[in-house]
Structures are given as C-alpha cells and as structure tokens.
Length: 84
Image (tube, rainbow, N blue to C red; front, side, top):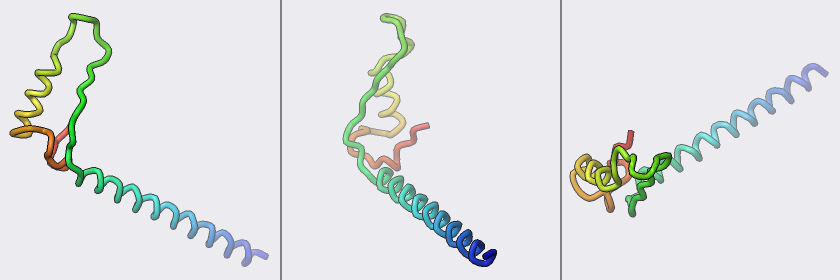
C-alpha cells in the first residue's frame, strides 16, 4: 500500500512539474513575441490631476520620447524602446 501511494505521489509531482514548465515556456514565448513586434502607435493618458495643474503635457512627453529614441517612435521595434 505504501509503495502504491509513493508511486501516485511521484506521478502527481511529476505532472505538476510538467505543468509549471509548460506555463513557463508559454509565458516566455509570449514575451518574446511581444518584444519582437513593431510599435504601431502610442497613447498618452495623464490621470489624477486638477484642470490647469499639470506639471507636464502630452507634447512634452512625446518630445522626450522622440529624443530618447532618436527619431519617431512609430515603426520602431518594441525591444529597442527603453521604457523604465
């Protein structure tokens, strides 16, 4: 009886290990596919402010992004954009 239970436990652990490895593989593939894509556009949304009390504007943010990417953002690879 103990041997049968140990075998069941081993296969259950093996199954969950396979599920975890499979999920890791799927997540890694999805991240690589997203990084390899090309930027089709961007949307800047500033939230949590009172009208007329902005520290910056959308135009300033766009100019900073263009300066950081040395050109237009649209059409560049997502992996080349540094967003931190």
